[in-house]
Length: 174
Ligand SMILES: C[S@@+](CC[C@H](N)C(=O)[O-])C[C@H]1O[C@@H](n2cnc3c(N)ncnc32)[C@H](O)[C@@H]1O
Image 1 (cartoon, rainbow, N blue to C red):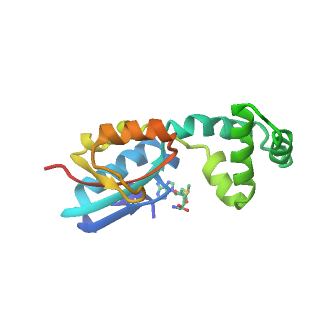
Image 2 (image 1 turned 90 degrees about the horizontal axis):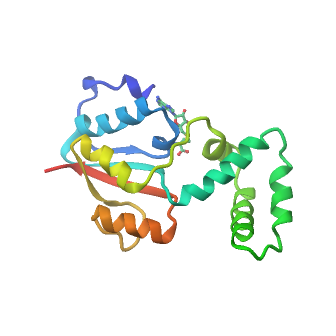
Image 3 (image 1 turned 60 degrees about the horizontal axis):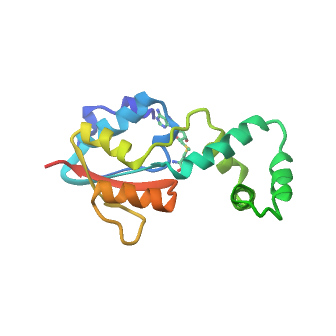
């Protein structure tokens, strides 16, 4: 069913999971996802939302634009992979590593990840500003050893590691 159709008849839940949705939907649906977390999460419940993050997606946006430009030409990825095989510069090496990785993934995944019309990466702190505006607070990330529950420190780590995806757990703000 459509996420937008979820209403008060659903009641509350201990866990709410929205994996691989938030970055690929309209702002209206994004707003609704956070709304659902606020109004359908039990008092001590945990909501999980995954999404594409910057700065990692600043560089991946180049790959997305490359794929959109070459959408009718499926040999383009192979061309770029071969053309960068011996690259010594930072950009060429980045391109080769990313394309090599993506060449091994199913086309359906690449389509959803890169070519879908909606694709809005954002910084972790921006995501948290939206969550906090809905009365939600940062609990931690589901996948990152050594993660803290401090938004500023986590944002600094994202800049340091060029992070491109987050699995954020939210709870009610006290
Ligand atoms: C990038 S895909 C990810 C699919 C899956 N969650 C995964 O991680 O493999 C995004 C999904 O969001 C779904 N979607 C987009 N808008 C939606 C809405 N308003 N209600 C329910 N699903 C929606 C799309 O149909 C699509 O399957």
